Image (cartoon, rainbow, N blue to C red; front, side, top):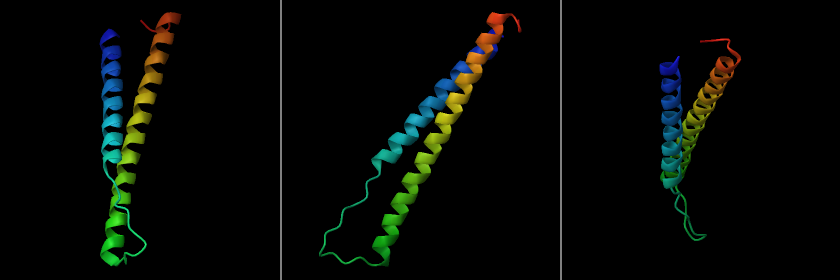
Length: 89
Protein backbone atom coordinates (compact mmCIF):
# COMPACT_ATOMS: atom_id res chain seq x y z
CA UNK A 1 0.00 0.00 0.00
CA UNK A 2 2.80 2.41 0.89
CA UNK A 3 4.52 1.85 -2.45
CA UNK A 4 1.28 2.56 -4.33
CA UNK A 5 0.83 5.84 -2.48
CA UNK A 6 4.42 6.88 -3.25
CA UNK A 7 3.90 6.06 -6.94
CA UNK A 8 0.71 8.15 -6.99
CA UNK A 9 2.49 11.02 -5.21
CA UNK A 10 5.30 11.04 -7.78
CA UNK A 11 2.78 10.82 -10.63
CA UNK A 12 1.03 13.91 -9.22
CA UNK A 13 4.34 15.77 -9.12
CA UNK A 14 5.18 14.70 -12.69
CA UNK A 15 1.76 15.75 -14.03
CA UNK A 16 1.96 19.12 -12.27
CA UNK A 17 5.46 19.73 -13.68
CA UNK A 18 4.31 18.76 -17.18
CA UNK A 19 1.38 21.16 -16.88
CA UNK A 20 3.63 24.01 -15.77
CA UNK A 21 6.07 23.28 -18.60
CA UNK A 22 3.37 23.26 -21.29
CA UNK A 23 1.88 26.53 -20.04
CA UNK A 24 5.32 28.12 -19.88
CA UNK A 25 5.97 27.06 -23.50
CA UNK A 26 2.58 28.44 -24.56
CA UNK A 27 3.30 31.75 -22.87
CA UNK A 28 6.62 32.11 -24.70
CA UNK A 29 5.02 32.25 -28.16
CA UNK A 30 4.19 35.79 -29.13
CA UNK A 31 2.16 36.91 -32.12
CA UNK A 32 3.72 39.89 -33.88
CA UNK A 33 1.65 43.06 -33.91
CA UNK A 34 0.92 44.67 -37.24
CA UNK A 35 0.41 48.32 -38.10
CA UNK A 36 -2.54 49.90 -39.89
CA UNK A 37 -0.40 50.71 -42.92
CA UNK A 38 0.82 47.13 -43.32
CA UNK A 39 -0.86 44.93 -45.90
CA UNK A 40 -1.45 41.33 -44.99
CA UNK A 41 -0.92 38.60 -47.51
CA UNK A 42 -1.67 34.89 -47.29
CA UNK A 43 1.74 34.07 -45.81
CA UNK A 44 1.24 36.60 -42.98
CA UNK A 45 -2.18 35.23 -42.13
CA UNK A 46 -0.80 31.68 -42.25
CA UNK A 47 1.95 32.60 -39.75
CA UNK A 48 -0.59 34.17 -37.40
CA UNK A 49 -2.93 31.17 -37.57
CA UNK A 50 -0.02 28.74 -37.08
CA UNK A 51 1.18 30.62 -33.98
CA UNK A 52 -2.34 30.65 -32.51
CA UNK A 53 -2.79 26.93 -33.25
CA UNK A 54 0.51 26.03 -31.58
CA UNK A 55 -0.43 28.02 -28.49
CA UNK A 56 -3.84 26.34 -28.37
CA UNK A 57 -2.26 22.88 -28.64
CA UNK A 58 0.16 23.64 -25.80
CA UNK A 59 -2.68 25.05 -23.66
CA UNK A 60 -4.77 21.92 -24.24
CA UNK A 61 -1.82 19.69 -23.25
CA UNK A 62 -1.33 21.75 -20.11
CA UNK A 63 -5.02 21.47 -19.25
CA UNK A 64 -4.88 17.70 -19.78
CA UNK A 65 -1.84 17.41 -17.50
CA UNK A 66 -3.61 19.53 -14.87
CA UNK A 67 -6.67 17.28 -15.06
CA UNK A 68 -4.45 14.20 -14.68
CA UNK A 69 -2.80 15.72 -11.60
CA UNK A 70 -6.20 16.54 -10.11
CA UNK A 71 -7.52 13.02 -10.74
CA UNK A 72 -4.40 11.46 -9.22
CA UNK A 73 -4.67 13.76 -6.19
CA UNK A 74 -8.34 12.83 -5.77
CA UNK A 75 -7.43 9.15 -5.95
CA UNK A 76 -4.68 9.66 -3.40
CA UNK A 77 -7.08 11.40 -1.02
CA UNK A 78 -9.62 8.61 -1.53
CA UNK A 79 -6.98 5.99 -0.71
CA UNK A 80 -6.09 7.86 2.48
CA UNK A 81 -9.75 8.11 3.47
CA UNK A 82 -10.31 4.40 2.85
CA UNK A 83 -7.23 3.43 4.82
CA UNK A 84 -8.32 5.66 7.73
CA UNK A 85 -11.73 3.96 7.74
CA UNK A 86 -10.01 0.57 7.77
CA UNK A 87 -11.48 -0.51 4.45
CA UNK A 88 -8.06 -1.35 3.01
CA UNK A 89 -4.86 -2.44 4.70
